[in-house]
Image (tube, rainbow, N blue to C red; front, side, top):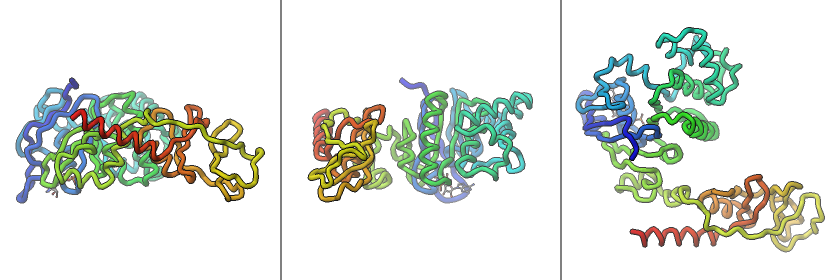
Length: 362
Ligand SMILES: Nc1ncnc2c1ncn2[C@@H]1O[C@H](COP(=O)(O)OP(=O)(O)OP(=O)(O)O)[C@@H](O)[C@H]1O
């Protein structure tokens, strides 16, 4: 069984008047995992996160980190012992990137030279060119600033990282990159990360476990993303995770059972007959897919859909078939060479048998 790193025991936060911001929260957060707090605006996610490092003090209840009641540690010391990343990177505008990252180690008594050296290494860890270290925060893009925010939070090598909507101010493509980068980092670092977002997609991508909060600071469900999509605990959770949860749930099952069929290919610039009478896949000299030629379309190249790779999920298999102009999803091997095609109807029948097997197991 996983070991608890952070525990909330009947924690309530009541600001003046009104209903509690957080109401009798009890939950246990595993060491070395990513736990995502998700829910609609105002449901107490940020308040819950900030009570972990005492930026906010609970009205009642107890929070322990590593078995120690957080109120037994001076608030300033506690805060420095945890990394904190927020939505606006929170960088100090008049300090260089390197000096920003070195802030907490310097406060902890690390020499200037060592702290800067470590800061430069961390730029590399978060995927930034170390030459950016001399710049000021305003000379970086939003995505780069968020990476610096992550580097700064990691600088003192804290076991716990608190992240409050760290990627919500950047565009969707950069956001996707930052999410993948965080997962990659976490594979090496194995920190205990608590991550706040209002975006259920982000929660299911990142979370080992997801805590769904309802307004009034009540914990509505706390489970793996797979379980939350498959078996929402209430009407509220079902509506919060959204209408396409059935489709998104396919992202948790591998498509090993889906057959890959041979496909007719033609090399670009090769012997193409002018009018193909069925769909055929155009490939380059290394057998990598370029697009399709269709019947009656004068051998004009039509862009292909998404690709299906070994180990991919049912969601990707289905998307490959649905996004392909021929209706045949292109499967490639680990080198990106065409391995064959998958058919939408067959993906659906694998999905259906997986569903029946699950029901049989109940
Ligand atoms: N300092 C404060 N004083 C009074 N009320 C507060 C304070 N901070 C938060 N609240 C209230 O507590 C409730 C929970 O706020 P919190 O910021 O924790 O929610 P959230 O889920 O993080 O929301 P969002 O996604 O909008 O950031 C809200 O009703 C909010 O108005």
